[in-house]
Amino acid sequence: FDQRGVGHSKIESINDKNINLNVMVEDLEALRKKLNYAKFSIVGHSFGGAYAQAYAAKYPKNIEKLILTSSIGVDVAAKDGTVANMLSRLSDDDKVKYKYWTSAEQRKKDSRKASTEALRLVTKTYVYDQKYVPEVEKILLDMDEYDPRVLELVMKSMALGYNVKGAFKNFKAPTLIIACRQDFMGEENPIVLKENIPGSRLVFLNECSHCP
Image 1 (cartoon, rainbow, N blue to C red):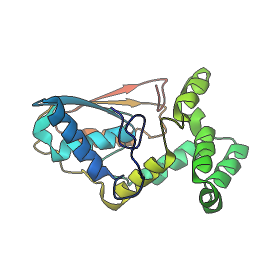
Image 2: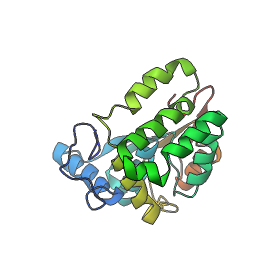
Image 3: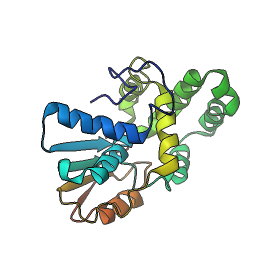
Image 4: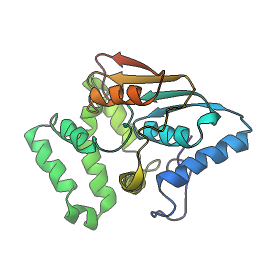
């Protein structure tokens, strides 16, 4: 489903009160109730993986099955390493451009354009087979479906309190973790996920990156 502020889930104003992980977890719970499901299965990719974990940690009895693909880990401790790994795959010229577009000056001048251009530069790191870069770029840079401010606010809220380490000790739902060998998220991250969710299964795929 489209998370709030994304795609068809439009909201009138975008701020840290109506865009944060806590209210998004409650959105998912409201959706479950609206659909009249006693339990449902959740698939979460990338940030969606953190979203799924946050929901499952709060409402474990409502989960039928959980699948995490290229997921953010149990907290945001690995964020700097993930970004560094991503940037290491760029050319020196693209690194300079990325630094320019992510500067405070450009973000203040036009945050939407700055985020768009920065994302355009790193899109090539999202895929293993570079022939798919145009396709992935088209999806990621569709500004009718995605507002960069939403992700910025969500990540801000996560930095202030996202940590599900130890929250799955009594979690019973079957859980599958899918990770890619060439993902800039790294291989340690999914291993930590597996250790945090008892009985979970971890599968590594080769020759694939963040968007397999």
